[in-house]
Amino acid sequence: MTNALRIGIAGLGTVGTGVLDILAVHGDLIAARAGRPVRLTAVSARSQSKPRGSHNLSNLEWHNDPVELAKSAGIDVFVELIGGHTGAAKGAVEAAIGAGKHVITANKALLAHHGVALARAAEAKGLALNFEAAVAGGIPVIKALREGLVGNAPKRVFGIMNGTCNYILTKMGEDGRGFADVLKEAQELGYAEDDPTFDVGGFDTAHKLAVLTSLAFGTEVNLGAIKIEGIEKVALADIRNAAELGYKIKLLGVAVNYESGIEQRVHPTLIKRGSPVSETDDVFNAIVVKGDFVGDLVLEGRGAGRHPTASAVLSDIVDIARGNIRPTFGIPAASLKKYKDSSPRAHEGGFYVALDLHDKPGAVAAIATILAAAKISIESIVQRGKTDASAPRATAQFILITHDTLESSLQAAMTKIERDGHVAGPPRVIRIERF
Ligand code: HSE
Image 1 (cartoon, rainbow, N blue to C red):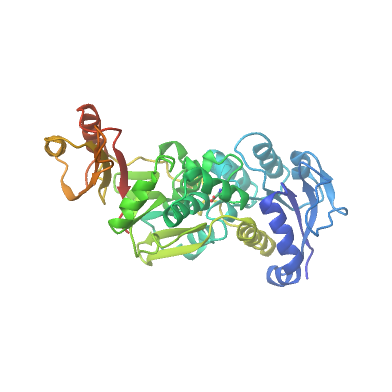
Image 2 (cartoon, rainbow, N blue to C red; image 1 turned 180 degrees about the vertical axis):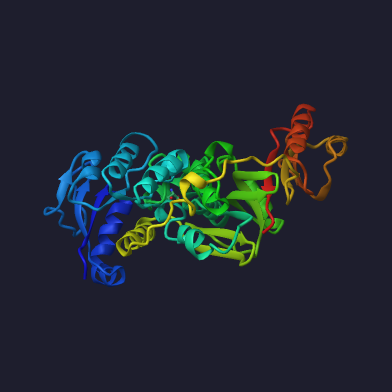
């Protein structure tokens, strides 16, 4: 066997300790697969004294400053598990590349903001910048797009990319529990980001989608082009209504490569029950790739958590140990196309609209008139009885499913509906996605 590959890990939180666990259990197997031993030689973390299970780290090189670890002569590969797109993580990755170290990162925010610049710097030196753990936890979607699907020019990539949101929406639906209660549980299970607004606000999904878009379509990463909506406004009533209409609600990231340019969006979505994506529940993620030659591909698995994410880090380590160094985004970063936004188009799949309608004559006619004027065609309508028959201002739930329509037309109609005095609160609008 050739020389050991020496690994330095910055950040010994949930994922970092997961990597220690796997190396401890599968050290020999990994060496056999990599063709050389893989050895953890150095670490950097906030606390040196914090117990880390059964792992004895006393013989390792210890750095308080991750930048110092990144530059250490004692490592070949710098594994960045710090998180965040500024500060220590960025500085340390830049320092590692500057010092000629291969880099592995689980940091989707860093890649979404600075991925192309970092990839250019790494590729200029013949170094790897690998990030399997940054997208969809343990699912090898990066390897699939970068290697397995090289014979395809995908037209559409979409799916559930945030385990925390999927966990919350699943439990709200199954148990009728409130949003905050389930979020707390997801945090305790180690799924959520340090700041869970990144999860529930859709930003974590957007970071992942931005990177997948680049990899799938060969364009520069453009996080700013993504329309982002989180799950904070999804009501239990919407989840129930969706179920009765034969749908589930999921937070999806969607990227489509049209002739006119690219569309990227993150938002809660109704999906028909019975599809691989709608049946992906709990912390699981599912990514669909529509390849032009392979057809539809669905990759499903655990999208967050200690060992699934650490499993992805190990895949990157073994690639480097074997000398399998590929361009970060599939083609050299210097050759990525300029990003081009698609022109506005009707949303394929239509919209779910929930209105709390004042129960008085003419209300439905008024809504129908506004929608007709906006050329919005209705596919189906459901009306539920008064929320409280004895209340003087009782409302009825009025649920519409539209045909494909422009989002701008729908939003303009919703503004009119909200202003015309027939609804008790803002309309709740959720896109529907066809599989
Ligand atoms: N907070 C992320 C999630 C972790 O819930 O999916 C994995 O990126």
